[in-house]
Image (tube, rainbow, N blue to C red):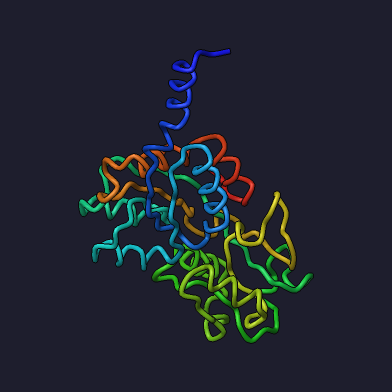
Length: 249
């Protein structure tokens, strides 16, 4: 049986990480909400640090950061925004990396509505099609690029219903306000399968890669919790969660 002093020393070592645990405010692209909630839980359990998550459109986060929002880490839906923040001195130089590559899908909550080839875009008789605002959300921009490559933009543009971000876009389709729309695969996938409805995974060659970069913002420089989260996102545990939600690396 360990001596009392030895036991006290062991207990002190065990709680040391928790004694220095911190909180990190994180701006999270809306498409990454589900996996990031799971990662945040695992991160807190493993490190004691707590990630406080705000979900939204990358473009809006950029505006908030430039106006002094106290985020310490940005998980963007693109790679351009973190690069721009670094260039402007609002993010720590050389801290950014690609944490996931997103997949765009055309999805309907109705089984059998979207065919596996996406032909519904050319011949479907629907009044509305949802997409995220392409000026704010990279998935919306990718949707526009894909429709352009398919030559259906002129036909479909009068039917566009735009969400402020990809979460709102998914809601439009899930509630039936739009019978189909372009969303992130991660929003409709669990355990490697489409959970319900019908979907067409848009071929990657139809749009620019959706490289999603993380960056340490200047407010997070030197902050233990922020730096720990940046490291944790590259861990095997985090990457397994990310892959399970339909992302690539």
